[in-house]
Image (cartoon, rainbow, N blue to C red; front, side):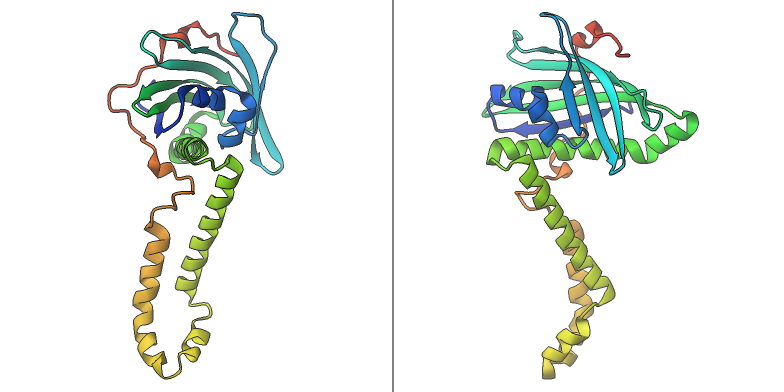
Length: 253
């Protein structure tokens, strides 16, 4: 991986076999991974790499699709597991043209270090490279980390991906309402009238209270039941290298 490649790591207290199933089965994978709307395996012969199709709904009226090929090592001498893939999208509106990545599963005490490294080539020339550097690549990194934490909540606390998304939307809405109220003073006059003789003192404290409310809404850590990208590690402790398994995969067409 190059210096611009993405790296995400989460420590998940779960059984290795269960984590493998939730990440390798397409029907399970697409439930927790924000980056994919559909993942479908294609027929294959025994011993061959697994080809697949994927799709991502970018907007309500726009879905971009692509193809990929993957392979996994479920039994390794050191007890770890690895999967690798290459992918590409011919869709003209897909900024992502082609890329490759891997997952590693490293047993660690009562859990598993689940990590990924991936990189891709954007299309649209210099404009695409600029859009990728300023917007798309940071967004992809956030979406991957958020998804990893949603997977962690599913395995550790039994919070389904669908419920985790609702928790996130509710918390995001509450924070937005607090900031809106604090910045616009919406309904503040009515509240002060209810305070009667204490209104003058309350009005004096209001700016401080509103500022404190904005700080809490912006910077308070998410609730334990809400997925959060910030809980994931975004830089490897040592140099991250793609597994040798990657070399055995052809570029999908």
